[in-house]
Length: 90
Image (tube, rainbow, N blue to C red; front, side, top):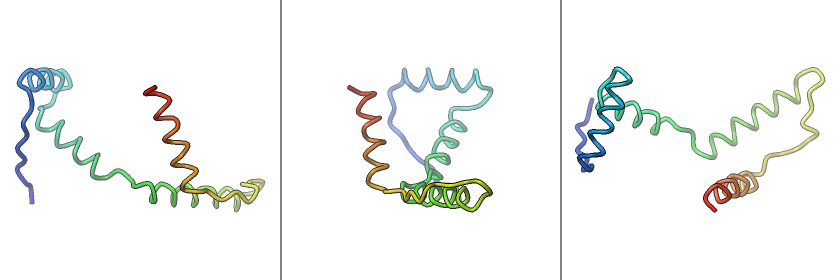
């Protein structure tokens, strides 16, 4: 069941966003709805880790494929991601 959502956004920002939506042949409402759906369907870190581990296992099972026994370490993956993020900001 749809839920109405009220947002407080600067008027100039809304007008610019409406123009972007118009150029894309849609409404601002549709763009926001689509963004919220994408946001809600994003994988969590644990889900991504599981997907990577499943893909890595498939490589091991494939002819000639090998991960050389490497196991993903969630903290190491997060650390690398944070390092890339900090590098972009600094």
